[in-house]
Length: 250
Ligand SMILES: [Zn+2]
Ligand SMILES: [Zn+2]
Image 1 (cartoon, rainbow, N blue to C red):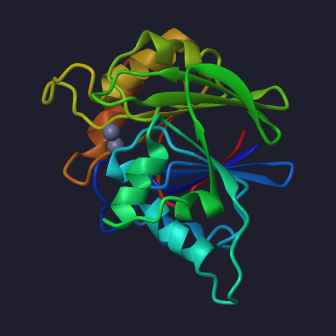
Image 2: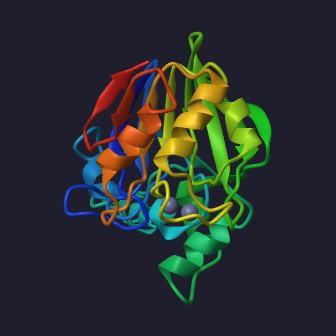
């Protein structure tokens, strides 16, 4: 499978990057993980507007889902007068309501579901196209999921937003690529069950036996090189920084 970073800025967009959004492709199927601020524009560098086959939303913080409102407009009011068929959207309880009310304060009840087929995520294992995915609750102030994506014997794990979490250790077990948030700086911010710092991301990768660590969701006010150095101090494998338009064959 192929992973492409669409956006990776943490909490709010930077001058260089949209917020969280990652394109995962295999067998011609395109699964988007999260669609944060600015992601819809960037996405069009990588595929056509209507080429997505499914969307997974890790949680409902705006930096992971708010461009779904813009994508609704693009699918509902096509320039050719047609309307896109619904594609599956996997998200926490209340995803449809949240996106609908974010879009308009007087929503028509059925509009979003005409172009998105909403599925409520719980901790479970299920199929999305050619992928077998496993989801678990992670440690964040709202209902938030990490996801393990398997295809052809290869494993990609995406943390979503989380503090230190035993569930994340399991999701990342022996992962070929572990895409892990590192929003905080070791020795600076220390708020449990919110975000990881670079050291904690490295420790998680080491405990899980992941083969490669890619740090993401680093806010514009955080020095990413500090987080890379902190992760490398505790994890022996390769450590990269996510960047827009980077892609990985997994
Ligand atoms: Zn976030
Ligand atoms: Zn969050």
